[in-house]
Image (cartoon, rainbow, N blue to C red; front, side, top):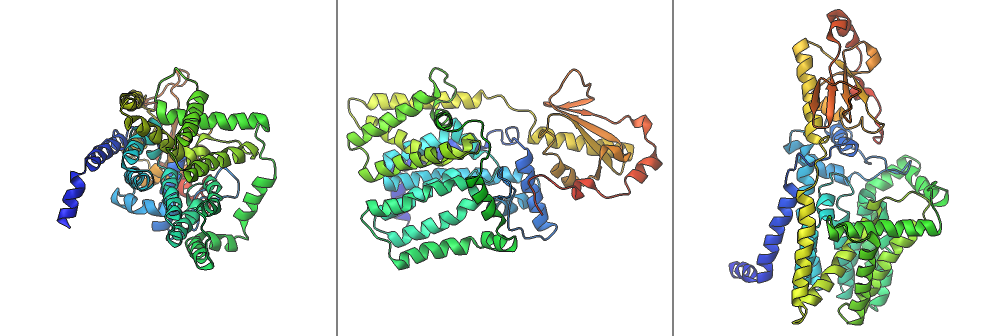
Length: 497
């Protein structure tokens, strides 16, 4: 055993991989608190965990998605619980979770790409994933959709098992991944047609037993979804059907929608590779990669199987979202990013393996690192996230204590949506919060700072206005605090009981 371990670490690729892994870890943990964009989605995670651990409510669903009546699955939230417990319910526990998932993603890319395409290809793919500005901040997103890229890596592993004629194992992998789609991002369902296509391309038929493994695994792991749907009269199923069959009122449709989707995919790909270089349009980078993809096939640097799979993979996402009437966001297309990472790695390794072109491969890698690391280390920190919100709420708590207030009221001077992300901190600090018309002392949060509103104290980009203390008496305040804590009893958008 020890001899085998020594052999692994004598492998130069292993040494390079460990160095890349350290780089990836550093980029994902650097200024973890300062760059934690704590907002409504992150707050909902805390409330979910509170509901489970404090109220003893074993939830079958997570937060409601942007499609009314459709909820994301609870897997990510339950996965967050140990990290919140380690952090004593502080939301920073969520950062620890996604950092771990990011490292698992890096290891997965190296293993799966290495098994599928080769060790050098795996090394370059891992380097791209490790240092890409887009990937780094995707992995730092403390949201349920963060593991989407990790899911797609293991989907490639399942496809490779089909190539290796290990159909039963492939069906087990696909069953697990299919069940996870509800918990991560419904857009991943667009990859499922690739399974029968891959079976056909590999001249392999899945027998009843193998299909039973797939369906049984999917059904068993989808039990929370099945129970929820039965209990609530198939509310999500109906909502999904409605979203697909009725107009979701996007402002563009037809050819313009197609161009919009291609633009968004181009923007994602540009962010994946180009860092803060502004000399090229988004579309040029995408079409360059697609041209390289074709050249790789013509040069027999990629097999017919993977060329067909990757081409259809991209086409499925573009076709669906170009015809879907809902407004499309960039993150809907994250399910294609692993394809472009692999295409780029195949191109770079082709250069590196050529005696005449190896220096160009090294230049491409060097430019990629310069562009992306430069953008990472020059990014402006949005000073309205975790650090500032936590400090502001603590200041309210401290000021209440000084004045002997048993509760307070909160108001906001900001745009709709930017008043979110505070309620969990109020609960965490044990504060009783009322509405501004309750008669309780009113603290006002201002964002962004504006000369029109004189604030008493600032926390980064956030401002706090203290109550007019002279207008409150102890008796009136005590009476206003006798009722329910609205911070606990008021409904919360996105969190359904």
